Length: 166
Image (cartoon, rainbow, N blue to C red; front, top):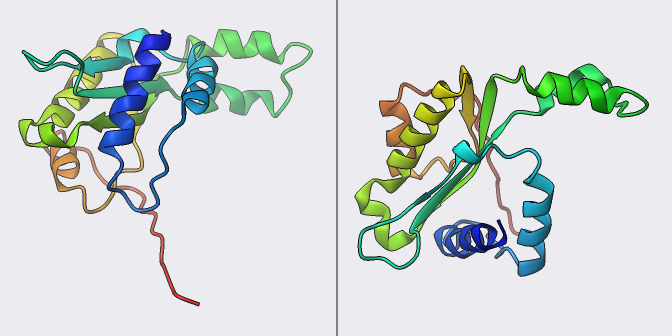
């Protein structure tokens, strides 16, 4: 598990380095994030992409069941019995969210991001998930947006950051 977290960190830091406001994920941050996601993650929805001849993976996707749908019914109360309701409700989550996806820049032209989306979608359907969300995709990330359009995904929310010198 720790090795997989390090692989995610390595790819993420390279794949996202050109994005506005990027800050590399540190060793401590990736370990804490991995520890926090371990109980939530579905192993069939965390994938690595390998290219023949490459010693390490060149891409990854981390897709998570949307636990927020189960948390809503707790109304902020985990104790005394909220944790039990959460465990029971977790089995009935049918919505997933792509937490993060990254492909090494040299491998972008190969369509690996689209393949990761497709494999995640197929695994999710096989496991009973009926809907999902791919979040925080930059508007100018043409390859990822094109891949999603081919899967009949649609943009339902746009976040923008504006910059102004003071």
